[in-house]
Image 1 (cartoon, one colour):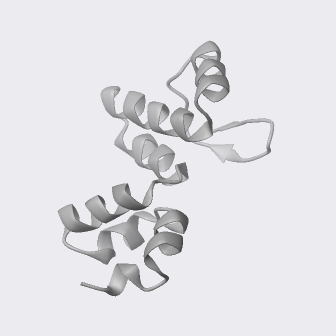
Image 2 (cartoon, helix red, strand yellow; image 1 turned 45 degrees about the vertical axis):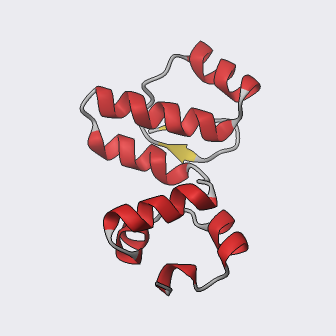
Image 3 (cartoon, one colour; image 1 turned 120 degrees about the vertical axis):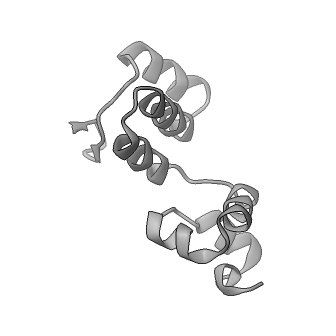
Length: 98
């Protein structure tokens, strides 16, 4: 795992430093996390792909979609996905509601 300036341990990187910096400056840190997740998936490194995906702060609608497609809250909890935006939009109990 590599360490970036914020001191946060991160999974194996599949982007070049230039790609990471470009995404960070143009779009933001979540774009870096999602691009790293995609590149790890393409490289066959599913563990790193999920580790990168877990770092991203997903939108409320994306989390609602994941909940619907995986059959409920268990998958989101098991994967350790960040639910801050959905908690704010839907309420703290959204994962357990129908």
